[in-house]
Image 1 (cartoon, rainbow, N blue to C red):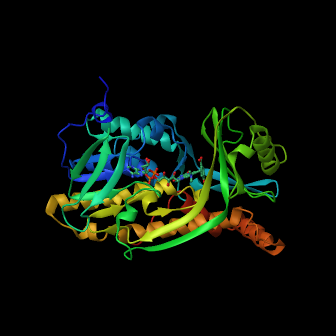
Image 2: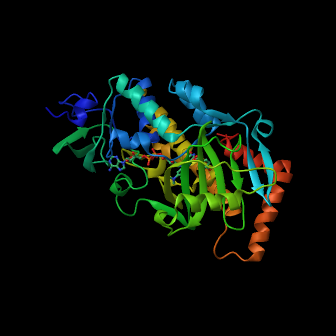
Image 3: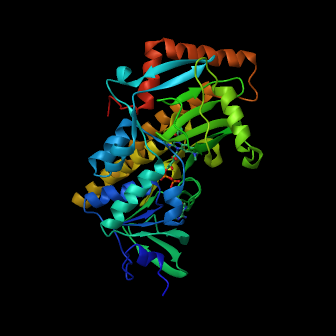
Length: 407
Ligand code: RFL
Ligand code: PHB
């Protein structure tokens, strides 16, 4: 007999009601489900892709200090602690030289952890399924209903059969292309956005990384980034034109371009087999407010940043921490104040990350309409950023995750 996705994930066939319906099993949806379960709050996660797909989707790699602490504090950090790489600085490379931004010194010992997003997704899925809580993979035709009321529901197809979940709260954690944001009536949301005239070509390669720390490289030919996933797996990126096709980039061309941009005296870039490659568009995007009635948007469903600041997944994890606390207050005492303030409580951090990501992107990339004057401004900004302690500190405290002094 064929096993349905629901049986594979231990969902009772009769399931029709839960407290929180979560749309999307990315970092936001899975972390929200995890945080709610720690508070004894029931949820059902629905996901349009297969489990294998979401566990192998290569994306983010950098966790802010606060995100790593959150995984640790909630019992989801064991593998991150043993396999993740803790870094206390990054290199800015321009004019063929490296300039270190020392996070440890500039932020009182804070740092980042390099650990793949899909590993966090694997860890959170394993935790949830081993506790017997449901995730429904491969759902389709997802629709949200009655989100204006206090009895919303989510309908979808699972294994070809119609299903509907009644709930108190819907969490839209379905990413930039999901259905949740579009379920909010026209005219409610204000959208802020910026497109960039370039994209990132990213590869995974079976090589020992040629640097202990990430290298953000400004070059006349365009931006390049050296990152990593483990002592034997490198992750590298190249700025390419927005409409570039991956088919035009055989491995040899990618290495040649990486070698040209990353070249520095006394340093060499190791090459190895490319195991994965793809091109990602760059965009800045925010909708306000991040809620409507009983629907709450979290992560990429509400905002997108260009990856230069390594902020997207970190923002997604922060949003759901704020939401989980608000949902817990709602169930503990029927108090809707934190739910009402959810959007406002997220947006200050969201806009800080928007500005930082835009700023890093503007400083490090070549823009097609830039003239020699603009390029000199970028070099002046880079030189100041690495020379001035105040400017280095600003970069460092944003990169590891800015913590507001005022509440
Ligand atoms: P996700 O990860 O997109 O997850 C959304 C999930 O919802 C599912 N879905 C649906 N499910 C049910 N019904 C529907 N109708 C659905 N529609 C969609 C999707 O299949 C998916 O599983 O959103 P989430 O959870 O908000 O997480 C956001 C992060 O994925 C994203 O911000 C980061 O990857 C951004 N990012 C980085 N962030 C960092 O914090 N640090 C980094 O180092 C970093 N590097 C990056 C990045 C993003 C990149 N790309 C791909 C643009 C590097 C790159 C190249
Ligand atoms: C990554 O390792 O995938 C990565 C690192 C830093 C960024 C973006 C992506 O800014």
